[in-house]
Structures are given as C-alpha cells and as structure tokens.
Image (cartoon, rainbow, N blue to C red; front, side):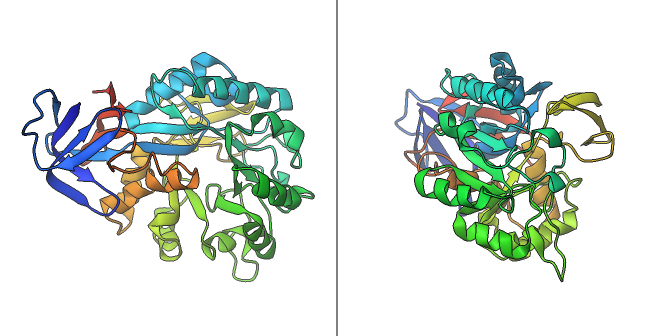
Length: 377
C-alpha cells in the first residue's frame, strides 16, 4: 500500500488539497490522513500536483524509434521513455506504407501490448493511413494510400482501437457504416478533403473523433465550411496538436468556444525525432528535417511533431482560460472515454488502476506510477 501526502490531487472536477491518496495496484481512496496505515509507503508530493497518468492516442514514435520499425526494442524504448513526460498509456500509431510493413507493425504492437509492463502501457493501435485522401496526405507517401480494405485489418480487430479515414473516398463511407455496427473500433475523420455535408454524413454514420483538428483536412471557409466546420458543429471528439506550430494559440480559444473541454483530446503526433537533437530523421520512408522545434519534409510540409505531452498540457493551460483540472481532462478521462476505458483509467477514483503522476507548476514530471508500480522517481 502507498500513500501520497502533501499533494494537490486533480480530480475530474477540482483540485483537492490537504488530502491523502491511498493506492496499491488500484486506487483505494482519498482520505484525510494516514493514521492507522502503519504498513503504507508514504510518498511526499512536496506540494506538487497529483494527477491521473496522461494518455496519448496519436504518437508515431520518439527517442529515434517508430511504431513502424516493427521491432520489440523500438516499442520498448518508446514506452519506457514516455514515462518521463507523464504518459502512462498510449496508442502506437502507424503511417501509410506497404501492407506488409503495416501488418508487421501491428503484429509487434500486439505482442508488446501483452508484454510485462516496463513503461507506459500500450492500449491498442491507431491506424493513421492508408485509408485517407491523397489530396490531404500531409506526410503520408501517396503511393501507399488506398481505399478502405477489410482484408488489411481483419486479423487485427483486437488491437486496432482507432482508424483515421477519409469518408469521401469511394467505398469508405460504407466501410464506416458496416464496421461501426460490428466492431468496437473508433473511426476518426482525418487526412480528408470531404465537404461539410460529406463530413456530417460520416459523423452520422459512425465517425466519433477528428484527427489533429485543422491539420490535413478541408479548411474552415465561410462558403465551403469543410471538415473543420463539421467537427466544430458536432459533438464528436477532436485531437489537437498544441505545439503552437501546427495550430496557432489563438485557435485554441476559438476551438474551445465551440467544443467544450470534455470533447478535446491533446495529442503529440510525435515522430522518432521527439526527445532527440534537431537533425535529419525519417517518417514513413520520407526524409524529415527537424529544426526550430518543427519536423518538415523537404517541401516544407509538417511531418508529425517533436512535442511532448506534458508540453502540450502546459501550452493549453497558458494560452486558454481553462483551469488546470479542465486541461488535465484532455489527456486523461477524455481519451479514456473515447477508447471505452474510462471505467478503469483516466481519473483518480476508487477502484481505477493506479496510473498516477506527480508534476510541478511547470508540468515537469516528478514521479510516475503505473498500476501502483513506481516507474519514474
């Protein structure tokens, strides 16, 4: 049994002070003191914040490793390193490559998801590409883009949790409708050139979120509203890359004027250069240059990010009027709800898994616990 004292505990609705958080592999209680708990390991938070662990549902890689490497060592390196930045659960994310490379990556993600926890937990996979629109390909290689193909994913329905898709491509809307009825996989509209009407039809058909809002989608226009407007006018979740490069901070507030913080999910969309020195790297078989905090292809196209999730939290907190507990929702309970895991993850409540982090006023991580086990201290 462990007891965190002298911490400011972040719950769904507030920040609680002068309380004690009791946990083992699961959270036991928030109580007044540790009297009578003689066998408890007491952890002094030293007036820092005590939060649910962060969940990143869209991350390609970091530490010079990528989910598409298809190697155990790559995923192990990523999952161990992410704990330094408060991430306790994530979805390794694929990119458009040949079918065999995608299958190899998904096989590896599945194996690692069942491996003994030695870092952030793999909660499934995010299939970003190849079922997208070449007109909004971003950093995806056009030669690997295709319409939705059940044969590609049929053996991976257990591990794929999110599929990014362009519904306007022939056959993709029917694919969404059928899969939505028979599979728990969540569909996210992204890398899409859909009209406003096509996007709204797709949302009605089963789209539940939007991939990196404003990026790689038909833009907000007063005569042709596009995907962005459909997302803002609906109740679906939307991802946001809050690095202040992909989206200007002024848009954070505009987004929150239409989407509540309950429907916003911060992501990193990080690629292998995250947490590394600036230089030349690769993503989806293409050369990427990282300088001035941005990752770009040779033509200037943004190619993922080098963002860390705790930095995204800080950026949203500093550039909006949200309170800290509202910002924390965007990396905890919101992604947990989208994935259908909110009964066990995403908030500090009795009975939930003890995925807990401690951080200071700068959102620098002081300690990370995964299912009660101290991973970082």
